[in-house]
Length: 262
Image (cartoon, rainbow, N blue to C red):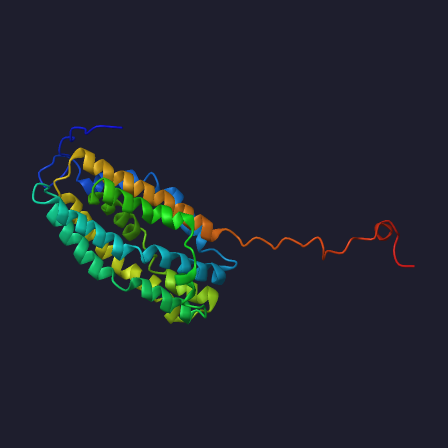
C-alpha cells in the first residue's frame, strides 16, 4: 500500500518557460509514431481491403461508442473535484463541449456498415475484442482512480491520428464501395484537425503540475501502443480454414510412386 506523494513543480501553463506542454507531448509521441504509422499503413493495403474495411468499421464502432461516455464521466469527476483543483472547471467545460461534438459519431459507423452491405446491428451484438477494452478501459480506471486530466492523452492520440484526407477516395477506388460507406472516414479527416488544435491550446493553457503532465503523457503513450496493436490485428490476414481430418481424403500411396497413366 502506497502513501501520497508531494506534487511536482508546475511544468506548463501560460507562464511556464521552455516549450509548451503540447510541444513536449508531441515530441514524446514522436517516439511511438513509427510503430503506429506502420500499423496504419498495413491496414490499408491490398489485397482483401474490402473485408478489412468492414472489420475496421466494426472495431472502430466499439472504440467510438465509448468516447462520449468517457468524456461525460470525466466531466462528472471534474465537477466533484471542486474549486480547490484549478484544472477541474476548464476540464469539465472541455469534456462536456467535446462530448456534444462527438455525439452520434458511433451511429455514423453503423450507417457506413449498412451502405457497405453489412448488418449494422452486428456491432451491438459482438463482444468487442480485448484490445478495445484495453484501449478505453484504462481511461475509465485513470478517470476514476487518478485524475480525469489523463483522458486528454487518449483524446489527443485519437484526434491526432485521424484518417488521411485522401483515404476515403482510395477506399472507394480499391473496393468499389459507395461514398455513403466512407462517410466517417471522410468527415473525421476534416473534423479532427480542428479538434486537435483546440486540445493543444487547452493543454498549453492549463496549470499542469509536472506529475499531471506525466500522467497525460503516460495515457497518450498507452493509447498509441494499444491503437497500433488494434490496427495490426485488423491488418492480419484471415487464417485459412483448418481441414477436417474426417473429411480429408487419404492419398493412395501407390499413386505417388507410379510413373504416370497406364
